[in-house]
Structures are given as structure tokens and as C-alpha cells.
Length: 300
Image (tube, rainbow, N blue to C red):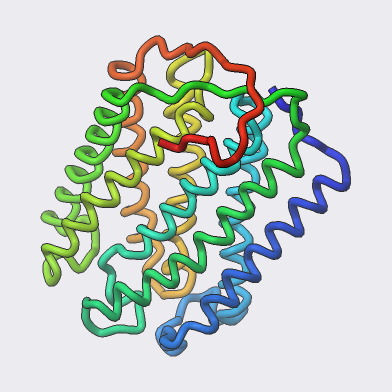
């Protein structure tokens, strides 16, 4: 295991990295050609502190959670710091990039769903994804003491990987379908049914893929339940924080945001428990001592 640096230097590095990532994201959002009508932002927090302060605080919280996750896992995994940073950076980046495409038109500057909406959300997602990818690598490399030799853990088998992605996708689809059809989850599914279900399936696959690339990092030799718990405490909590932005800036939206993302996390936890208990069993892989170059790292 790699001990977490507690020196002043590592703390300052972490804080500066979070601040830079948040500043970069805010700058990207600010230069977007389309912007949200500030008049729609009527939450109590926006009224009291103003939209810029609320937005800045949100990104600081989001990236702080990413930083804490990387530092916590880096000190407990057998995977090298570089691989850990890349895997976490890619995972968070995929969440932001594809999560932004959820069909919730009223949270955007557009009145209808279409190409302009997709393009706008794509660039907004890129603005969140690039900083978090860089942040995770910097935190892993410069705030965690590296062992003399990098230790690599084998990825899970292809069949197990496909099963894991399928189980998480199906679980997410079932949970969202029940929510959409009963009206329990507020969405634009009634108006844009096909795009809504396409996004649901694709995002479920993304969550499944994230599970597979994080599994070697989250793996524990003690109990299989450690992986689902770590997965939810990191990816699940991050998904809730990511979704909470609308709740922070729009009056009355937080309850629906927390309900929707909370149900997502429950479905994700159940699916990851099924995978850990019945699909990926006895995966105590032999660790390989090697000094891998970045271009040889497999994220599949």
C-alpha cells in the first residue's frame, strides 16, 4: 500500500489542484455561446449568495470529493498511482460527459430537445471532464508516496466484464423505467421517450464500464462486499453531487434531484452486490511487479 502524504506540501498541492480544476471548469462554462437565463435561477442559495458563488462552491465540493476518493483508494490499493489516477479520472470524466446528456430540457437554455441541446451539453460535459481527469492524475502522482516498484493487478476476465456491464445496465434501466412510467422520477420521458430511453441504456452501460475499470483499484482481499461499498461511496456519491447542481440553483428542484439520483445509487449498489457475490468470485489475482509505461496501460 502507498501511504498518503500528510505533509504541508501535499495538502497545498491538493488544494491548488482543486482550485485550478474548478476555475478551469467555470471558465469553460462562462465562454459557452448559450447560457442559462439567470432569471430562472431562483433557489434560496442563489438569492442569498448569488449564482457565481453557488456555482463555484458546487465545483469545489465536487472536485474535493474526487480528490478525497483518489487519495483514500491510492493508500489502499495495489494498483500503481498512475493507473489509479487514470482510472479514476476516466471514470469521473465519463460520468460528467454522458451524465450531461440526460434528457432534462428545462435545465438547459433550450426549449426543445435536439442537436443544439446535445451539442451544448457535450461541451458543458467536456468542460467538467477534462479538469477532473487531470486532477485525478495530479493527486495520485503528487500527493501519494509511491512504492519503489509499481504493482499491477490483472483486470477481470472478458466474460465477467460483459456480465458486469449487462447487470448494471439492466438494473439501471429497470429502476429508471419504473420511475419514468410511474411519474415517480420527474423527467422529459413523456415528451422525448426514445431519446430518454436511449440515454438510459447508454448511461447504464457507461456505469457498468466504470465498474469494470475501477474493480482492480477497489479490490480488497478481505471481503467481496468492500468493492460495492467503495464503488457506491465514490461513484454513487459523486453522481449525487453532480446531479445536485440543478437543485442548488433552482427552487424546489432539490427533492426530485436527490430522489432520482438516490434511486440510481440504490440500483447501482444492488447490481454491484450481485456482481461481487455471484459473478466475480475468488478474484484474488496474482500481483505483477513491473514498471509499466503510460502507453502500455490497459483500461479495458
